[in-house]
Length: 231
Image (tube, rainbow, N blue to C red; front, side):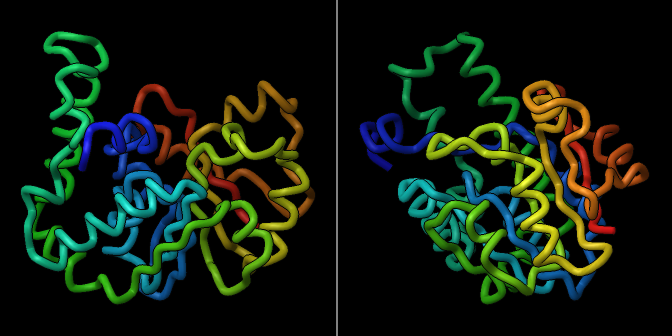
């Protein structure tokens, strides 16, 4: 990927969330149909191993293009390029020894360890026909499309450059499209609470205490994961 594209357009090339926390928090089942934030694709690929269908959505065309390039690497069986973090190639932006570079190296190492564990790369590769990628606002998709059993939002509620998000309204509309017991995973629960008050969950949505504790136990340090359940 060209350097100007990487830094002018592409924001995320390697997740800084804990993939294990996401998988455990979503309590994935073989018949789950999951809507997931696109980003760099790491989360959607991880979810794909366990779910029946996954739809990865990102509003940024560069991110969608990046995910599709990684899908191509999976199809080719090119593990090295699939796991590579192009940010680490950009010496001008990520000088040796910088804090930012160290963070990218740590995240990339975690990604490598996750996707190379016990044949996981090939398990995901075999399920690529069950992965859909779309350029769109994930909150709009979650509000307007039915058929999903679980939704992984990452920080889409607290960080949405295109518009202000009312979490109570959005979560209520998402819950209306999910079955009873459906789950919504957020990485930014504390930020939402800080910005909108502790009581922001709509009537039909509650915190799934057990799964939230599991997710928080294994989360990345900078995230405040929580799992909401449709009651």
